[in-house]
Length: 439
Length: 187
Image (cartoon, rainbow over the protein chains, first blue to last red):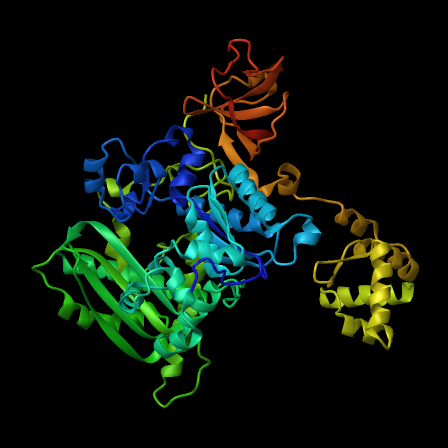
């Protein structure tokens, strides 16, 4: 088959854009402080690893997830900042709001990227799809102060290929009839949704590029792969299959709370208090969404990055930390090895279901649950008003009393170091600030 | 038409959404969607509602309409209500483009003759449309600076509002990030 043959005869049966922040967190920092511009910079100091890196840092060979000590060796002049999620969230919301000026069909895919459906807007906005994408990109760059890469295609998969095609500040327009020109240059594992397992399998079957994949016939795909891969195949062929999820996330499949602490510890009481704090926070989040867990697992992470943990099945769903901690405690002592040093604990609540309506039982359990519910309703009110750690279980006290990190990783983000007149630690002005020196 | 538009307005008041064509048929007693279509076109040209790209209708001057109907039906509207409609929050008053607005805390007194003091908070809007005469936030040697933007011939420069400071003439490109829209000082 000729590779020059298009996969589709149309241009934009649907017009989907994918908008992706260029080094989003690092860019948020560079945009508000001019002394950081053009310099290698990473965020993630509090985690001990690079979570976002500026393009200048990438050019120096720094990679995501690298440890700070390694990075400092590689690039001694690097600027290392603690993450300021408060600001990143404010700017993330602005990203979505700016895109919503053009269309209501926006999927907030993650903190720094979104999809938007522009189909049918050519006449009302009096411009073609490319112009719309350019306008959105320009608005974002001017109003937020840093760049985004944009892909325009007939569906989500193609739009995402477009936004990754040229970065930073790229705009790649892929009409359906030109898809093949891009796919022939794209290794199949770069397609969104195709993981290493599938790639290995496809490679064995002589499918190396995304175009090889798209050129297979439907029967071939159906026989060998599962449904999501058929959907990907259809989208690569220019069809619109994957809908945009424009509703805000209301339910969670699972709730996970993990926290690292430094220095690492061998003290079972201290490590347990860290775990207990995570359990309390996970339960609080579950109660906020009116959910209860049927199952959970907890884990301890050792200094050499090994995980040990246990899974627990509850006899009745719960979002009360005191109940859960009572069940975890004996298992914790089985898992905990005093010969090892620990650096993090975590808990994951899953099999979540809506808060149950109570049924009378033989053992008076209902009364106990009702009592807990009242107690934790009050706890939630107090915590919402005065801060997360104002009321806690005795078992979490040790973790709440000490700072999470006793070395430089305990550094606060610049914005959280000061309060404007009238601000409190829990309540700040919802407008991001320009930082750095003002002359 | 007035009777029909009133029915639509009432529907909007009760349900907080505009009715579909089907629902308008019920409200008006029309027998066909074509009649509804014609009614909608009339209301659109009267400026009461508007149509989006999919042909669905959205309210436009519908609240104005409610007020007039209020006069007809229920005598004088309460003056308090009238005034409520015309107030804005302090946020709206100070901020015009919410997504582009940032805060900067002033330090130094180079703008003191413009009434901007150290520690004041200024609301600034990121834009690439700064005009001479605006107070702007510019980037100079990796620092923020707030000055008047001035123009002499083709040359743009930054002028402080304090005689003790000298104007800044950019050697290369003048990097203007934002325009000052308001000053906040809390006592």
